Length: 463
Image 1 (tube, rainbow, N blue to C red):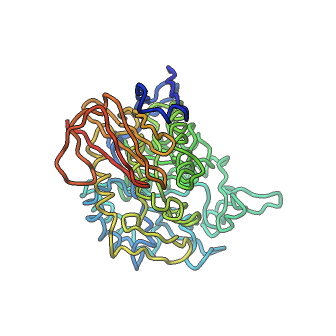
Image 2 (image 1 turned 90 degrees about the vertical axis):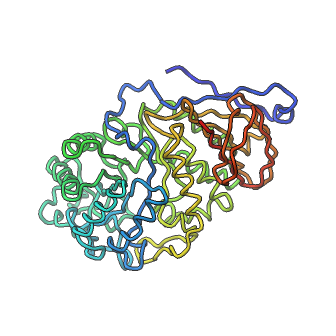
């Protein structure tokens, strides 16, 4: 592919930016080309969608499918489209951690955990979500099972053994789960059949695949081809960040490579340059590949503290960024409730949804993502135009553009006030501020802002 050069202004230039000729915007194409192995599968509906992770155990006092179902209409009204539900299968008792064990220690792939409800409850929940035009993907734990999964006795050859013949965990710290052996052809076949079961039994729309990078790519390619025969157009999310997994296997993978630098920006350890550096790396990824962007998820929250511990007063600013980047934004259970606690993983720890202070905030972002073609990702993505602002070390200003659809983002990613000036022909037009309901205003090719610490501005252009 043709190389796009993104030059960075020097510190000396910053000092004199307003006195000199403005630099042209830097453009990053919306569609990455040049791969010899493009994805064949992503469903068209996914290109302007979003994802919401459901921690079922902690979502309600009962932790049941039926009680969670009472939230579906609220989530639909908020703008949520894809529900990623953490594993709902029975949890192993042997070597269990904590009082309730890990969702990811499964004792039977084809049953519903009775603590959460029944298969009928699950089928009804999926149907209700579909009636609301929402999609449902199930968290799939393919790398390992509980030590009391029935395969342990009936098919010990399905597992990895040490030199003494003992079945072992995949990682020492994961002492409650047994590692599956993907060299065993029969195990692979059984795994795929188990995945098919959930599509046939409950009409789900796809899977989020746990530790997908620990499983051979050729298994996922085979599984994807077989699952497509049962449900054409399903959606597959990999908990991994490996370009190889996008080769005829997954539609989306994690965006850790930007998440961790964002945390460091919030901590003052890195500058906004880390974002533009990341965007450079994305030009080598295959056409149609997409990443899931987030400020929290169950792993980050439970093992590495809440987003409030990491992003502090900038929580909403970084959330806005995840909606503006070329990818799919994730909301984790409780973020709309401004949950600040680290949720326990192996024990009951109900999220408090009695107040929803950020529901309107996320609703506006979700609807913007849905309605603006410029914010689509994958094959249909709008281009990213990075607009210099005179404070490029602390403020990230960029536009997403596709034909007549344009959205401008100006984000102060620092704890200091910033005076910025944007100058670009792209800026001209009539805009509506996403986060207030004042009448639209006309702007020219220059904009000046006095930004408060962590302030964010999102302008949606009238077509």
